Image (cartoon, rainbow, N blue to C red; front, side, top):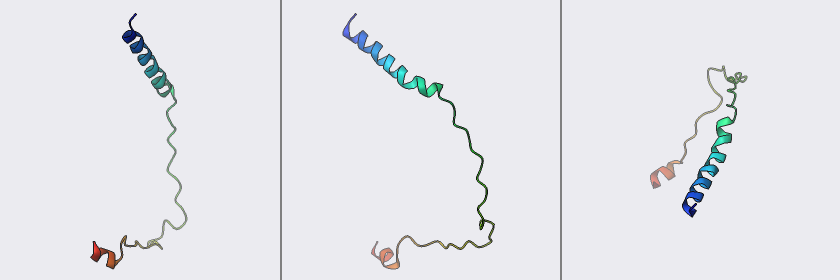
Length: 61
């Protein structure tokens, strides 16, 4: 056998060793949606969005 054939067989075997566990792994269980936290049902959230930049930064950019 030539070096190229041996290298090809080793490369295919190595790729098989890498992909085989991923194919045989169990699929992750999908968790149900979390229960709402107390305060989520409020009409107005106690948090207000903040601007990313100040007025001076906006003028600069």
